[in-house]
Length: 280
DNA sequence: CGTTACCTGAAA
DNA sequence: TTTCAGGTAACG
Figure 1 (cartoon, rainbow, N blue to C red):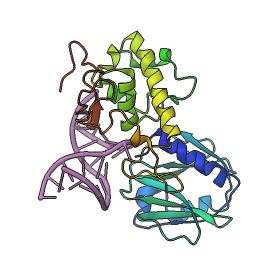
Figure 2 (cartoon, helix red, strand yellow):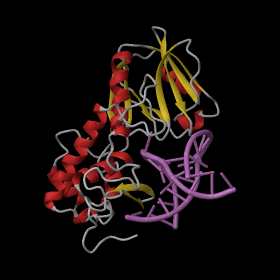
Figure 3 (cartoon, chains in turn green, purple, blue):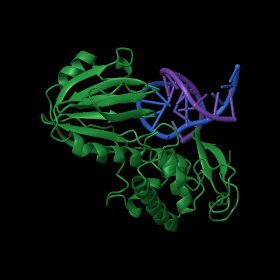
Figure 4 (cartoon, helix red, strand yellow):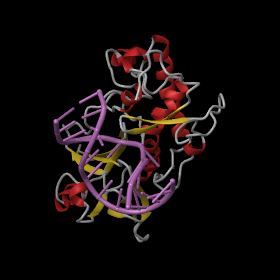
């Protein structure tokens, strides 16, 4: 569900609401706790209560709540996780699995149909996230750097783009959209991307993610922002889930294949199959 | 590197 | 009833 633009939208919404607020209580559904938390619900609550939020950050698809004692509360929404800012006495959310009450009468509700989401606490000196590639909207994400990463890789380019250790934050929607914007077939071997294509690919990744943030994320299914409102990216995609519908550029029907176990959408004309073509 | 499992509900 | 879902970790 949430990729970089969705997580960034939530981060921007929550930053002014949470910064300076102090955690008053943490409640977690006991059946969900073993999947959600990195410790017992009691230990988690004890670790967070009384802490004040100093920063609300993001790294890839991880939300990072910086606490006043140097620790970081690390949240990953995975497929169906939602963080909603609600008044204390607001009714429980559908599939609400946890809640964090803050001073001031509001709190965060955690809703997660599939229970894949994770909360953990990273202490001051811990790495808050696993090893991730660069932020695609940062300066360090250059064509030269990307070319070096692509070098020698045999995986399909689509799979490369989804690998968070290479680039942090692209998911299935924006990977398909970036490949369309760059005019590259998703099955092209990563190491076979040409020098001119690398530059287009770098720019395409940054552009689709920036536009995704501008449209406040993609609500094809479960995603909503911290107020419960849908984004509008789904009204602007060129290929994602447009199987059989005409390409906005050339009019040919968009195709759907499976790459690395993920649904993949592309235009067979605007993203021509590479010569010597990958098959499957 | 590719495949599978994790969990649940909506859509086909 | 079966398939599919925007993510990742753990497999072989």
